[in-house]
Length: 252
Image (cartoon, rainbow, N blue to C red):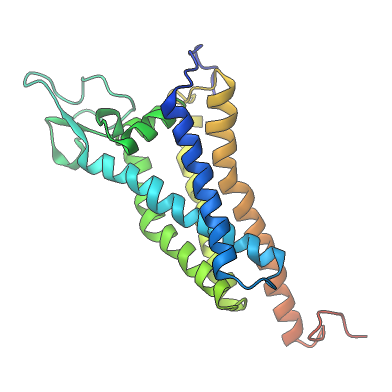
């Protein structure tokens, strides 16, 4: 259980609106890609799977990829007499004497940038301060997510586009879905175990939109994918054993 967050002032400005619109535009892009790349006769479930994985890939490459960029290339220089272990930081970056990328004189993260992507992550960091800096756990997870998960999502989309709804699709879709669930747990478990000091749950926007709604997407849809994979793999084994016919009906 997380401890109650201190009251905070909700600020809805141009950055807030543009960040939400960018997410909506990404979803619409995934939908229009499904219209462009899939035949009209595609079953609704297969189309939904395509839209989700296209959206997933775009979020990983564009949004989370920009987070990594800011973590590695956006920084502020510390005053000469100050070390990063005692300098104010938006997240619990490292232990004393441990320095991100080995630079004792720098602090990395979107909190220190002025670009559009830096401002986007500054907006989300209002709800979870770790995303304003270069938290080691978050950065490590995002490296896997962007360079592994993003590519897997594209591969799943390509298999659906080709109509290959067999074992390869469900294997890789299951690998990705399991990774998404694990990544979500490892993102928030460290916070829950220490009272969630970096999470702001004091108002509706941060609690229910940023932290709950957006992150629950990567729980609900991976579970949906795993359910569909379980059904498909189970049916394939039943057919192989002769328990059901090719129409999926049990043999008498």
